[in-house]
Length: 251
Length: 312
Ligand SMILES: Cc1cc2nc3c(=O)[nH]c(=O)nc-3n(C[C@H](O)[C@H](O)[C@H](O)COP(=O)(O)OP(=O)(O)OC[C@H]3O[C@@H](n4cnc5c(N)ncnc54)[C@H](O)[C@@H]3O)c2cc1C
Image 1 (cartoon, chains in turn red, yellow):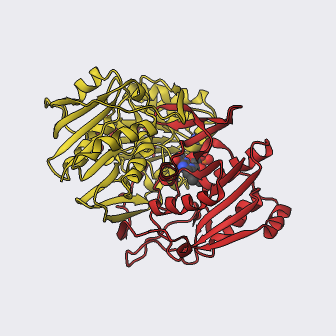
Image 2 (cartoon, chains in turn orange, brown):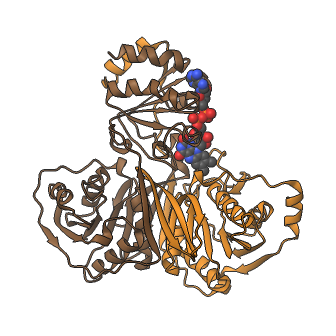
Image 3 (tube, chains in turn green, red):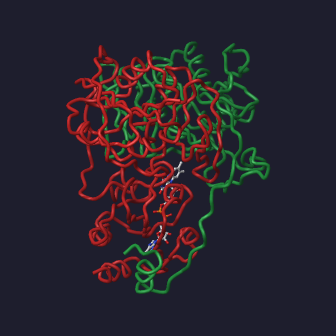
Protein backbone atom coordinates (compact mmCIF):
# COMPACT_ATOMS: atom_id res chain seq x y z
CA UNK A 1 0.00 0.00 0.00
CA UNK A 2 1.09 3.48 -0.80
CA UNK A 3 0.42 6.71 1.08
CA UNK A 4 0.46 10.28 -0.11
CA UNK A 5 1.13 12.72 2.74
CA UNK A 6 0.43 16.40 2.15
CA UNK A 7 2.55 18.96 3.97
CA UNK A 8 2.36 22.75 4.12
CA UNK A 9 5.05 25.25 4.97
CA UNK A 10 3.71 27.75 7.50
CA UNK A 11 4.99 30.31 10.01
CA UNK A 12 6.35 28.34 12.97
CA UNK A 13 3.79 27.97 15.75
CA UNK A 14 6.06 29.70 18.26
CA UNK A 15 6.40 32.89 16.24
CA UNK A 16 4.49 35.97 17.33
CA UNK A 17 2.29 36.96 14.42
CA UNK A 18 2.49 40.56 13.24
CA UNK A 19 -0.07 42.06 10.92
CA UNK A 20 1.43 44.24 8.17
CA UNK A 21 0.69 47.93 8.48
CA UNK A 22 -0.82 48.06 4.98
CA UNK A 23 -3.29 45.34 6.10
CA UNK A 24 -2.37 43.11 3.15
CA UNK A 25 -1.47 40.15 5.33
CA UNK A 26 0.93 39.10 8.05
CA UNK A 27 4.69 39.65 8.13
CA UNK A 28 6.51 36.69 6.59
CA UNK A 29 9.95 38.21 5.93
CA UNK A 30 12.71 36.91 8.19
CA UNK A 31 10.24 34.80 10.07
CA UNK A 32 10.91 31.18 11.01
CA UNK A 33 8.95 28.77 8.83
CA UNK A 34 8.20 25.12 9.66
CA UNK A 35 6.06 22.23 8.62
CA UNK A 36 2.46 22.70 9.79
CA UNK A 37 2.36 20.74 13.11
CA UNK A 38 -0.67 18.69 12.05
CA UNK A 39 1.18 17.64 8.89
CA UNK A 40 4.12 16.43 10.99
CA UNK A 41 1.63 14.17 12.72
CA UNK A 42 0.44 13.00 9.28
CA UNK A 43 4.00 12.13 8.22
CA UNK A 44 4.63 10.37 11.53
CA UNK A 45 1.49 8.26 11.15
CA UNK A 46 2.52 7.19 7.66
CA UNK A 47 6.01 6.29 8.87
CA UNK A 48 4.56 4.21 11.71
CA UNK A 49 2.24 2.41 9.30
CA UNK A 50 5.25 1.66 7.11
CA UNK A 51 7.22 0.38 10.10
CA UNK A 52 4.32 -1.94 10.90
CA UNK A 53 4.39 -3.24 7.34
CA UNK A 54 1.00 -1.76 6.37
CA UNK A 55 2.54 0.68 3.91
CA UNK A 56 5.30 0.10 1.38
CA UNK A 57 5.81 3.61 0.07
CA UNK A 58 5.33 7.15 1.39
CA UNK A 59 5.19 10.06 -1.04
CA UNK A 60 5.41 13.55 0.50
CA UNK A 61 3.62 16.29 -1.44
CA UNK A 62 3.73 20.02 -0.96
CA UNK A 63 2.24 22.89 -2.94
CA UNK A 64 4.05 26.17 -2.61
CA UNK A 65 7.11 28.18 -3.55
CA UNK A 66 10.58 26.71 -4.13
CA UNK A 67 11.19 26.95 -0.35
CA UNK A 68 8.56 24.29 0.29
CA UNK A 69 11.24 21.81 -0.80
CA UNK A 70 12.70 22.22 2.69
CA UNK A 71 9.40 21.15 4.18
CA UNK A 72 9.32 18.10 1.92
CA UNK A 73 12.92 17.29 2.96
CA UNK A 74 11.82 17.37 6.59
CA UNK A 75 9.16 14.80 5.72
CA UNK A 76 11.73 12.68 3.88
CA UNK A 77 14.09 12.87 6.87
CA UNK A 78 11.28 11.60 9.10
CA UNK A 79 10.84 8.57 6.83
CA UNK A 80 9.15 9.59 3.58
CA UNK A 81 10.48 7.85 0.46
CA UNK A 82 10.21 10.55 -2.19
CA UNK A 83 8.74 13.98 -2.69
CA UNK A 84 6.63 15.98 -5.12
CA UNK A 85 6.58 19.77 -5.17
CA UNK A 86 3.87 21.56 -7.11
CA UNK A 87 5.48 24.92 -7.57
CA UNK A 88 3.36 28.04 -7.32
CA UNK A 89 4.32 31.66 -6.77
CA UNK A 90 0.95 32.36 -5.18
CA UNK A 91 1.06 31.44 -1.51
CA UNK A 92 -2.65 31.89 -0.85
CA UNK A 93 -4.31 29.24 -2.96
CA UNK A 94 -7.94 28.58 -2.08
CA UNK A 95 -8.38 25.20 -0.36
CA UNK A 96 -10.76 24.07 -3.13
CA UNK A 97 -7.96 24.62 -5.64
CA UNK A 98 -5.46 22.89 -3.35
CA UNK A 99 -7.88 19.96 -3.31
CA UNK A 100 -8.03 19.94 -7.12
CA UNK A 101 -4.23 19.96 -7.35
CA UNK A 102 -3.89 17.08 -4.89
CA UNK A 103 -6.57 15.15 -6.76
CA UNK A 104 -4.60 15.64 -9.97
CA UNK A 105 -1.53 14.14 -8.28
CA UNK A 106 -3.64 11.28 -6.88
CA UNK A 107 -4.89 10.46 -10.38
CA UNK A 108 -1.27 9.82 -11.38
CA UNK A 109 0.04 8.29 -8.16
CA UNK A 110 -2.99 6.24 -7.10
CA UNK A 111 -2.25 6.24 -3.38
CA UNK A 112 -4.29 3.98 -1.08
CA UNK A 113 -4.18 6.43 1.80
CA UNK A 114 -3.98 10.18 1.64
CA UNK A 115 -3.04 11.63 5.02
CA UNK A 116 -3.25 15.36 5.76
CA UNK A 117 -3.26 17.57 8.83
CA UNK A 118 -6.79 18.52 9.92
CA UNK A 119 -5.96 22.20 9.58
CA UNK A 120 -3.07 24.47 8.72
CA UNK A 121 -2.21 26.85 11.52
CA UNK A 122 -1.95 29.82 9.14
CA UNK A 123 -5.41 30.10 7.58
CA UNK A 124 -7.02 27.71 10.14
CA UNK A 125 -9.46 26.58 7.43
CA UNK A 126 -9.85 22.88 8.28
CA UNK A 127 -11.20 21.76 4.92
CA UNK A 128 -8.61 20.43 2.47
CA UNK A 129 -9.02 16.78 3.49
CA UNK A 130 -12.80 16.98 3.25
CA UNK A 131 -12.59 18.69 -0.15
CA UNK A 132 -10.15 16.09 -1.47
CA UNK A 133 -12.23 13.16 -0.24
CA UNK A 134 -15.27 14.64 -1.98
CA UNK A 135 -13.41 15.19 -5.26
CA UNK A 136 -12.00 11.66 -5.19
CA UNK A 137 -15.28 10.16 -3.94
CA UNK A 138 -13.27 8.40 -1.24
CA UNK A 139 -14.52 8.10 2.34
CA UNK A 140 -13.07 10.59 4.81
CA UNK A 141 -11.92 10.05 8.37
CA UNK A 142 -11.27 13.49 9.78
CA UNK A 143 -9.74 14.58 13.13
CA UNK A 144 -8.22 11.13 13.66
CA UNK A 145 -6.79 10.21 17.05
CA UNK A 146 -6.34 6.49 16.29
CA UNK A 147 -5.93 4.56 13.04
CA UNK A 148 -6.09 0.76 12.94
CA UNK A 149 -5.84 -1.43 9.86
CA UNK A 150 -8.31 -4.31 9.65
CA UNK A 151 -7.71 -7.50 7.66
CA UNK A 152 -10.41 -6.73 5.07
CA UNK A 153 -8.95 -3.63 3.41
CA UNK A 154 -10.65 -1.27 5.81
CA UNK A 155 -9.46 1.01 8.57
CA UNK A 156 -11.05 1.74 11.93
CA UNK A 157 -10.49 5.39 12.67
CA UNK A 158 -11.29 7.04 15.99
CA UNK A 159 -12.21 10.69 15.56
CA UNK A 160 -12.11 13.52 18.08
CA UNK A 161 -15.56 15.07 17.92
CA UNK A 162 -17.40 17.52 20.17
CA UNK A 163 -18.71 15.50 23.07
CA UNK A 164 -16.39 12.50 22.83
CA UNK A 165 -14.81 10.03 20.45
CA UNK A 166 -16.43 8.54 17.37
CA UNK A 167 -15.14 5.45 15.59
CA UNK A 168 -15.91 4.80 11.95
CA UNK A 169 -14.82 2.06 9.56
CA UNK A 170 -13.69 3.28 6.14
CA UNK A 171 -12.83 1.33 3.01
CA UNK A 172 -9.41 1.86 1.49
CA UNK A 173 -8.66 4.01 -0.52
CA UNK A 174 -9.54 6.81 1.88
CA UNK A 175 -8.56 10.23 3.17
CA UNK A 176 -7.44 10.72 6.77
CA UNK A 177 -6.93 14.05 8.54
CA UNK A 178 -4.91 14.07 11.73
CA UNK A 179 -5.70 15.51 15.14
CA UNK A 180 -3.11 16.35 17.78
CA UNK A 181 -3.37 13.19 19.83
CA UNK A 182 -2.84 10.72 16.99
CA UNK A 183 0.87 10.47 17.74
CA UNK A 184 3.94 12.40 18.78
CA UNK A 185 6.10 13.12 15.75
CA UNK A 186 9.74 12.06 15.92
CA UNK A 187 12.70 14.34 15.42
CA UNK A 188 14.69 13.38 12.36
CA UNK A 189 18.14 12.06 13.27
CA UNK A 190 21.22 13.56 11.66
CA UNK A 191 21.96 10.46 9.56
CA UNK A 192 18.35 10.49 8.34
CA UNK A 193 18.60 14.18 7.49
CA UNK A 194 21.71 13.40 5.44
CA UNK A 195 20.00 10.46 3.74
CA UNK A 196 16.98 12.62 2.93
CA UNK A 197 19.22 14.86 0.81
CA UNK A 198 19.65 11.97 -1.63
CA UNK A 199 15.95 11.25 -1.92
CA UNK A 200 14.18 12.36 -5.06
CA UNK A 201 11.83 15.35 -5.25
CA UNK A 202 9.91 15.80 -8.52
CA UNK A 203 9.09 19.40 -9.24
CA UNK A 204 6.03 20.28 -11.29
CA UNK A 205 4.88 23.75 -12.20
CA UNK A 206 1.31 24.50 -11.16
CA UNK A 207 0.58 25.71 -14.70
CA UNK A 208 1.59 22.34 -16.19
CA UNK A 209 -1.42 20.72 -14.53
CA UNK A 210 -3.88 22.60 -16.78
CA UNK A 211 -6.47 22.97 -14.04
CA UNK A 212 -8.95 25.80 -13.76
CA UNK A 213 -7.77 27.38 -10.52
CA UNK A 214 -9.54 30.71 -10.56
CA UNK A 215 -9.66 32.46 -7.20
CA UNK A 216 -12.97 32.18 -5.41
CA UNK A 217 -12.31 34.10 -2.24
CA UNK A 218 -10.49 37.42 -2.03
CA UNK A 219 -8.78 38.60 1.12
CA UNK A 220 -9.80 42.27 1.30
CA UNK A 221 -7.76 43.10 4.36
CA UNK A 222 -6.10 41.59 7.41
CA UNK A 223 -6.40 43.36 10.76
CA UNK A 224 -5.15 43.00 14.29
CA UNK A 225 -7.70 41.38 16.57
CA UNK A 226 -9.41 43.69 19.07
CA UNK A 227 -7.18 44.05 22.12
CA UNK A 228 -8.29 43.13 25.60
CA UNK A 229 -7.95 45.94 28.07
CA UNK A 230 -5.12 45.35 30.53
CA UNK A 231 -6.07 43.66 33.77
CA UNK A 232 -4.70 43.72 37.29
CA UNK A 233 -3.01 41.35 39.69
CA UNK A 234 -4.98 40.90 42.90
CA UNK A 235 -3.17 40.28 46.20
CA UNK A 236 -5.37 37.48 47.59
CA UNK A 237 -8.50 35.39 47.22
CA UNK A 238 -10.65 37.84 49.17
CA UNK A 239 -9.96 40.65 46.76
CA UNK A 240 -10.46 38.28 43.82
CA UNK A 241 -13.91 37.31 45.08
CA UNK A 242 -14.65 40.96 45.78
CA UNK A 243 -13.73 42.00 42.22
CA UNK A 244 -15.87 39.24 40.74
CA UNK A 245 -18.82 40.31 42.89
CA UNK A 246 -18.58 44.06 42.66
CA UNK A 247 -16.75 44.89 39.43
CA UNK A 248 -17.56 41.97 37.17
CA UNK A 249 -20.91 41.46 38.90
CA UNK A 250 -20.72 37.77 38.14
CA UNK A 251 -20.86 36.04 41.51
CA UNK B 1 -31.06 36.34 -0.67
CA UNK B 2 -32.15 33.10 0.99
CA UNK B 3 -30.26 31.15 3.62
CA UNK B 4 -30.42 27.51 4.61
CA UNK B 5 -29.22 26.54 8.08
CA UNK B 6 -28.06 22.95 8.50
CA UNK B 7 -29.24 21.89 11.96
CA UNK B 8 -26.87 20.31 14.46
CA UNK B 9 -28.58 18.00 16.95
CA UNK B 10 -28.24 14.58 18.53
CA UNK B 11 -31.64 13.27 17.36
CA UNK B 12 -33.12 14.12 20.78
CA UNK B 13 -32.32 17.78 21.16
CA UNK B 14 -30.99 20.73 19.21
CA UNK B 15 -27.43 21.91 19.85
CA UNK B 16 -27.03 25.52 20.99
CA UNK B 17 -24.68 26.05 18.03
CA UNK B 18 -27.71 25.81 15.74
CA UNK B 19 -29.47 28.71 17.46
CA UNK B 20 -26.43 30.96 17.03
CA UNK B 21 -26.16 29.93 13.40
CA UNK B 22 -29.81 30.93 12.86
CA UNK B 23 -28.99 34.38 14.26
CA UNK B 24 -26.03 34.69 11.90
CA UNK B 25 -28.23 33.64 8.97
CA UNK B 26 -30.80 36.29 9.88
CA UNK B 27 -28.15 38.95 9.29
CA UNK B 28 -28.07 38.04 5.58
CA UNK B 29 -31.81 38.44 5.01
CA UNK B 30 -35.16 37.62 6.58
CA UNK B 31 -35.43 34.53 4.39
CA UNK B 32 -34.02 31.88 6.71
CA UNK B 33 -34.90 28.19 6.42
CA UNK B 34 -33.61 25.19 8.34
CA UNK B 35 -32.90 21.66 7.19
CA UNK B 36 -32.80 18.93 9.79
CA UNK B 37 -31.60 15.43 8.89
CA UNK B 38 -31.71 12.50 11.27
CA UNK B 39 -33.94 9.79 12.65
CA UNK B 40 -36.78 9.79 15.22
CA UNK B 41 -36.63 13.53 15.44
CA UNK B 42 -39.94 14.36 17.13
CA UNK B 43 -38.60 16.01 20.28
CA UNK B 44 -35.77 17.72 18.41
CA UNK B 45 -38.18 19.16 15.85
CA UNK B 46 -40.49 20.37 18.64
CA UNK B 47 -37.57 22.36 20.01
CA UNK B 48 -36.51 23.64 16.62
CA UNK B 49 -40.02 24.82 15.78
CA UNK B 50 -39.70 27.52 18.41
CA UNK B 51 -36.81 29.26 16.62
CA UNK B 52 -37.33 32.89 15.73
CA UNK B 53 -36.36 33.98 12.20
CA UNK B 54 -37.18 30.65 10.54
CA UNK B 55 -39.65 30.72 7.65
CA UNK B 56 -39.88 26.97 7.41
CA UNK B 57 -38.23 23.78 8.60
CA UNK B 58 -37.47 21.02 6.12
CA UNK B 59 -37.29 17.62 7.74
CA UNK B 60 -35.72 14.42 6.43
CA UNK B 61 -36.23 11.51 8.80
CA UNK B 62 -34.45 8.36 7.70
CA UNK B 63 -32.70 5.59 9.56
CA UNK B 64 -29.39 5.86 7.69
CA UNK B 65 -29.24 9.49 8.84
CA UNK B 66 -29.40 8.55 12.52
CA UNK B 67 -25.60 8.90 12.70
CA UNK B 68 -23.98 12.03 11.29
CA UNK B 69 -21.86 10.31 8.64
CA UNK B 70 -20.71 13.20 6.44
CA UNK B 71 -20.99 11.27 3.17
CA UNK B 72 -24.67 10.45 3.72
CA UNK B 73 -25.55 13.90 5.02
CA UNK B 74 -23.75 15.58 2.14
CA UNK B 75 -25.53 13.47 -0.51
CA UNK B 76 -28.92 14.28 0.96
CA UNK B 77 -28.22 18.00 1.33
CA UNK B 78 -26.86 18.36 -2.20
CA UNK B 79 -29.95 16.60 -3.60
CA UNK B 80 -32.15 18.86 -1.49
CA UNK B 81 -30.44 22.02 -2.77
CA UNK B 82 -30.82 21.05 -6.44
CA UNK B 83 -34.24 22.49 -7.17
CA UNK B 84 -34.10 25.29 -4.59
CA UNK B 85 -32.74 28.80 -4.87
CA UNK B 86 -30.68 29.20 -1.73
CA UNK B 87 -27.87 31.75 -1.93
CA UNK B 88 -26.29 30.85 1.43
CA UNK B 89 -25.79 27.60 3.33
CA UNK B 90 -24.79 28.09 6.98
CA UNK B 91 -23.58 25.32 9.30
CA UNK B 92 -22.21 25.64 12.84
CA UNK B 93 -18.42 25.55 12.98
CA UNK B 94 -18.39 22.54 15.30
CA UNK B 95 -16.72 19.22 14.47
CA UNK B 96 -20.07 18.26 12.88
CA UNK B 97 -20.03 21.31 10.61
CA UNK B 98 -16.33 21.27 9.86
CA UNK B 99 -16.60 17.66 8.75
CA UNK B 100 -19.64 18.23 6.55
CA UNK B 101 -19.72 21.76 5.16
CA UNK B 102 -16.57 21.61 2.96
CA UNK B 103 -18.06 18.54 1.25
CA UNK B 104 -21.28 20.40 0.40
CA UNK B 105 -19.25 23.30 -1.00
CA UNK B 106 -17.09 20.97 -3.07
CA UNK B 107 -20.13 19.25 -4.59
CA UNK B 108 -21.40 22.70 -5.57
CA UNK B 109 -17.92 23.63 -6.83
CA UNK B 110 -17.65 26.63 -4.50
CA UNK B 111 -15.08 27.61 -1.90
CA UNK B 112 -16.37 27.18 1.64
CA UNK B 113 -15.63 29.98 4.11
CA UNK B 114 -14.65 28.65 7.53
CA UNK B 115 -15.53 29.87 10.97
CA UNK B 116 -16.93 33.35 10.37
CA UNK B 117 -17.12 35.70 13.35
CA UNK B 118 -18.80 38.66 11.67
CA UNK B 119 -20.94 39.39 8.64
CA UNK B 120 -20.16 42.58 6.71
CA UNK B 121 -22.57 42.04 3.83
CA UNK B 122 -24.02 39.11 1.94
CA UNK B 123 -20.68 38.14 0.41
CA UNK B 124 -18.15 39.61 2.84
CA UNK B 125 -17.23 38.05 6.15
CA UNK B 126 -14.62 38.29 8.88
CA UNK B 127 -12.78 35.22 10.10
CA UNK B 128 -9.85 34.63 12.44
CA UNK B 129 -6.55 33.36 11.03
CA UNK B 130 -3.30 32.44 12.79
CA UNK B 131 -5.10 31.26 15.91
CA UNK B 132 -6.99 34.52 16.13
CA UNK B 133 -3.83 36.63 16.04
CA UNK B 134 -5.16 38.28 12.90
CA UNK B 135 -8.63 38.79 11.46
CA UNK B 136 -9.14 38.45 7.72
CA UNK B 137 -11.92 40.21 5.88
CA UNK B 138 -12.80 37.96 2.95
CA UNK B 139 -15.12 38.30 0.00
CA UNK B 140 -16.62 35.34 -1.78
CA UNK B 141 -17.11 35.51 -5.54
CA UNK B 142 -19.05 32.26 -5.66
CA UNK B 143 -22.73 32.07 -6.57
CA UNK B 144 -23.63 30.17 -3.41
CA UNK B 145 -21.92 31.03 -0.15
CA UNK B 146 -21.25 27.95 1.95
CA UNK B 147 -20.14 29.08 5.38
CA UNK B 148 -19.43 27.71 8.85
CA UNK B 149 -20.31 29.97 11.76
CA UNK B 150 -18.40 30.39 15.02
CA UNK B 151 -21.31 30.09 17.41
CA UNK B 152 -19.77 32.03 20.29
CA UNK B 153 -19.79 35.16 18.12
CA UNK B 154 -23.56 35.22 17.57
CA UNK B 155 -26.22 35.27 20.27
CA UNK B 156 -28.58 32.29 20.17
CA UNK B 157 -31.90 33.18 18.52
CA UNK B 158 -35.01 33.59 20.64
CA UNK B 159 -37.32 30.64 21.01
CA UNK B 160 -40.86 31.94 20.91
CA UNK B 161 -42.15 31.12 17.46
CA UNK B 162 -44.11 28.30 15.94
CA UNK B 163 -42.54 27.38 12.63
CA UNK B 164 -44.11 25.25 9.90
CA UNK B 165 -42.44 21.90 9.18
CA UNK B 166 -42.32 20.23 5.78
CA UNK B 167 -41.57 16.52 5.63
CA UNK B 168 -39.28 15.68 2.73
CA UNK B 169 -39.13 12.28 1.13
CA UNK B 170 -35.69 10.83 0.53
CA UNK B 171 -34.29 8.26 -1.86
CA UNK B 172 -30.87 8.38 -0.26
CA UNK B 173 -29.01 5.11 -0.32
CA UNK B 174 -26.29 4.49 2.21
CA UNK B 175 -22.69 5.14 1.31
CA UNK B 176 -21.10 1.68 1.49
CA UNK B 177 -17.54 2.96 1.85
CA UNK B 178 -18.01 4.17 5.40
CA UNK B 179 -19.71 2.66 8.44
CA UNK B 180 -20.41 3.98 11.88
CA UNK B 181 -18.83 1.79 14.56
CA UNK B 182 -19.20 3.47 17.90
CA UNK B 183 -19.62 6.78 19.74
CA UNK B 184 -17.94 7.07 23.08
CA UNK B 185 -19.69 10.05 24.63
CA UNK B 186 -17.98 11.70 27.56
CA UNK B 187 -20.93 12.13 29.88
CA UNK B 188 -21.23 15.09 32.19
CA UNK B 189 -23.96 16.79 34.17
CA UNK B 190 -22.25 20.13 33.76
CA UNK B 191 -23.14 22.75 31.14
CA UNK B 192 -21.61 22.43 27.67
CA UNK B 193 -18.34 24.29 27.25
CA UNK B 194 -19.42 26.24 24.19
CA UNK B 195 -22.54 27.66 25.80
CA UNK B 196 -21.55 27.87 29.49
CA UNK B 197 -21.71 31.21 31.33
CA UNK B 198 -18.81 30.26 33.60
CA UNK B 199 -15.91 27.93 32.84
CA UNK B 200 -13.11 26.75 35.08
CA UNK B 201 -10.17 25.11 33.31
CA UNK B 202 -7.08 23.33 34.53
CA UNK B 203 -3.68 22.95 32.94
CA UNK B 204 -0.49 21.02 33.42
CA UNK B 205 -0.12 22.76 36.78
CA UNK B 206 -2.81 20.45 38.17
CA UNK B 207 -0.28 17.58 37.90
CA UNK B 208 -2.80 14.74 37.56
CA UNK B 209 -6.44 13.91 36.92
CA UNK B 210 -7.20 13.35 40.59
CA UNK B 211 -6.34 16.98 41.36
CA UNK B 212 -9.10 18.18 39.02
CA UNK B 213 -11.36 17.43 42.01
CA UNK B 214 -10.05 20.74 43.39
CA UNK B 215 -11.77 22.45 40.46
CA UNK B 216 -14.93 20.37 40.71
CA UNK B 217 -16.05 21.79 44.03
CA UNK B 218 -15.75 25.29 42.63
CA UNK B 219 -17.48 24.32 39.38
CA UNK B 220 -20.38 22.89 41.43
CA UNK B 221 -20.79 26.11 43.37
CA UNK B 222 -20.66 28.30 40.28
CA UNK B 223 -22.65 26.02 37.99
CA UNK B 224 -19.61 26.13 35.75
CA UNK B 225 -18.45 23.95 32.88
CA UNK B 226 -15.00 22.39 33.13
CA UNK B 227 -12.25 22.70 30.55
CA UNK B 228 -8.54 22.07 30.16
CA UNK B 229 -5.42 23.01 28.26
CA UNK B 230 -3.99 20.73 25.64
CA UNK B 231 -1.16 19.76 27.98
CA UNK B 232 -3.67 18.50 30.56
CA UNK B 233 -5.58 16.54 27.94
CA UNK B 234 -2.45 15.08 26.33
CA UNK B 235 -1.25 13.96 29.75
CA UNK B 236 -4.52 12.06 30.14
CA UNK B 237 -5.79 14.08 33.15
CA UNK B 238 -9.18 14.70 31.50
CA UNK B 239 -11.12 13.69 28.33
CA UNK B 240 -10.16 15.14 24.96
CA UNK B 241 -13.37 17.09 24.48
CA UNK B 242 -12.44 19.32 27.42
CA UNK B 243 -9.67 20.94 25.39
CA UNK B 244 -10.06 24.66 24.93
CA UNK B 245 -8.08 26.52 22.29
CA UNK B 246 -7.19 26.96 18.64
CA UNK B 247 -7.67 23.28 17.95
CA UNK B 248 -10.08 22.48 20.73
CA UNK B 249 -13.24 24.33 21.69
CA UNK B 250 -13.64 28.06 21.21
CA UNK B 251 -15.45 29.46 24.22
CA UNK B 252 -16.80 32.85 25.25
CA UNK B 253 -18.28 32.67 28.74
CA UNK B 254 -18.95 35.63 31.03
CA UNK B 255 -16.18 34.30 33.27
CA UNK B 256 -13.24 32.06 32.38
CA UNK B 257 -11.03 30.86 35.23
CA UNK B 258 -7.66 29.42 34.14
CA UNK B 259 -5.84 27.46 36.80
CA UNK B 260 -2.26 26.23 36.28
CA UNK B 261 -2.38 27.23 32.63
CA UNK B 262 0.52 29.23 31.19
CA UNK B 263 -1.45 31.00 28.44
CA UNK B 264 0.13 29.74 25.20
CA UNK B 265 -1.24 31.56 22.13
CA UNK B 266 -3.07 28.41 21.07
CA UNK B 267 -4.93 28.35 24.39
CA UNK B 268 -5.63 32.10 24.36
CA UNK B 269 -7.11 31.69 20.86
CA UNK B 270 -9.97 29.77 22.41
CA UNK B 271 -10.79 32.11 25.30
CA UNK B 272 -10.15 35.64 24.00
CA UNK B 273 -13.81 36.49 23.61
CA UNK B 274 -14.63 35.73 27.25
CA UNK B 275 -16.06 38.72 29.11
CA UNK B 276 -13.82 38.28 32.14
CA UNK B 277 -10.71 36.14 32.43
CA UNK B 278 -9.25 35.16 35.79
CA UNK B 279 -6.04 33.21 36.28
CA UNK B 280 -4.38 31.49 39.17
CA UNK B 281 -0.72 30.74 38.51
CA UNK B 282 2.36 30.58 40.71
CA UNK B 283 4.59 32.08 38.04
CA UNK B 284 3.97 35.81 37.80
CA UNK B 285 5.78 35.85 34.44
CA UNK B 286 3.29 33.44 32.85
CA UNK B 287 1.75 34.98 29.69
CA UNK B 288 -1.77 34.25 30.95
CA UNK B 289 -1.51 37.31 33.22
CA UNK B 290 -1.36 39.57 30.16
CA UNK B 291 -4.78 38.35 29.10
CA UNK B 292 -6.41 38.21 32.53
CA UNK B 293 -8.68 40.88 33.97
CA UNK B 294 -7.85 39.57 37.44
CA UNK B 295 -4.76 37.50 38.10
CA UNK B 296 -3.71 35.84 41.32
CA UNK B 297 -0.09 34.79 41.85
CA UNK B 298 -0.45 31.77 44.09
CA UNK B 299 0.11 28.07 44.45
CA UNK B 300 -3.11 26.56 43.17
CA UNK B 301 -3.06 23.81 45.79
CA UNK B 302 -3.31 26.45 48.50
CA UNK B 303 -5.56 28.89 46.64
CA UNK B 304 -8.30 26.57 45.36
CA UNK B 305 -9.53 25.22 48.73
CA UNK B 306 -9.71 28.79 50.04
CA UNK B 307 -11.58 29.99 46.97
CA UNK B 308 -14.06 27.14 47.29
CA UNK B 309 -14.73 28.09 50.91
CA UNK B 310 -15.16 31.78 50.10
CA UNK B 311 -17.80 30.95 47.54
CA UNK B 312 -20.05 29.51 50.21
C1 LIG C 1 -0.64 23.08 16.51
C2 LIG C 1 -0.84 23.29 17.98
C3 LIG C 1 -2.12 23.41 18.45
C4 LIG C 1 -2.36 23.58 19.81
N1 LIG C 1 -3.64 23.72 20.24
C5 LIG C 1 -3.86 23.92 21.55
C6 LIG C 1 -5.20 24.11 22.05
O1 LIG C 1 -6.18 24.04 21.32
N2 LIG C 1 -5.36 24.34 23.38
C7 LIG C 1 -4.29 24.41 24.25
O2 LIG C 1 -4.51 24.63 25.45
N3 LIG C 1 -3.04 24.23 23.80
C8 LIG C 1 -2.80 23.98 22.49
N4 LIG C 1 -1.52 23.78 22.06
C9 LIG C 1 -0.45 23.63 23.08
C10 LIG C 1 0.09 24.93 23.63
O3 LIG C 1 1.12 25.41 22.79
C11 LIG C 1 0.67 24.71 25.04
O4 LIG C 1 1.65 23.72 24.97
C12 LIG C 1 -0.37 24.29 26.08
O5 LIG C 1 -1.48 25.15 26.03
C13 LIG C 1 0.26 24.34 27.46
O6 LIG C 1 -0.66 23.88 28.43
P1 LIG C 1 -0.53 24.37 29.94
O7 LIG C 1 -0.65 25.84 30.00
O8 LIG C 1 -1.46 23.55 30.75
O9 LIG C 1 0.93 23.86 30.34
P2 LIG C 1 2.23 24.68 30.66
O10 LIG C 1 2.58 25.60 29.58
O11 LIG C 1 3.24 23.69 31.09
O12 LIG C 1 1.82 25.58 31.90
C14 LIG C 1 1.57 25.11 33.17
C15 LIG C 1 1.39 26.32 34.06
O13 LIG C 1 1.03 25.90 35.35
C16 LIG C 1 1.66 26.72 36.31
N5 LIG C 1 1.76 25.95 37.55
C17 LIG C 1 2.45 24.80 37.77
N6 LIG C 1 2.29 24.39 39.05
C18 LIG C 1 1.49 25.29 39.65
C19 LIG C 1 0.97 25.42 40.96
N7 LIG C 1 1.23 24.52 41.90
N8 LIG C 1 0.19 26.47 41.22
C20 LIG C 1 -0.10 27.40 40.27
N9 LIG C 1 0.37 27.33 39.02
C21 LIG C 1 1.15 26.28 38.71
C22 LIG C 1 3.00 27.03 35.71
O14 LIG C 1 3.53 28.23 36.26
C23 LIG C 1 2.66 27.16 34.22
O15 LIG C 1 2.38 28.51 33.88
C24 LIG C 1 -1.27 23.62 20.71
C25 LIG C 1 0.03 23.52 20.22
C26 LIG C 1 0.26 23.34 18.88
C27 LIG C 1 1.65 23.22 18.39
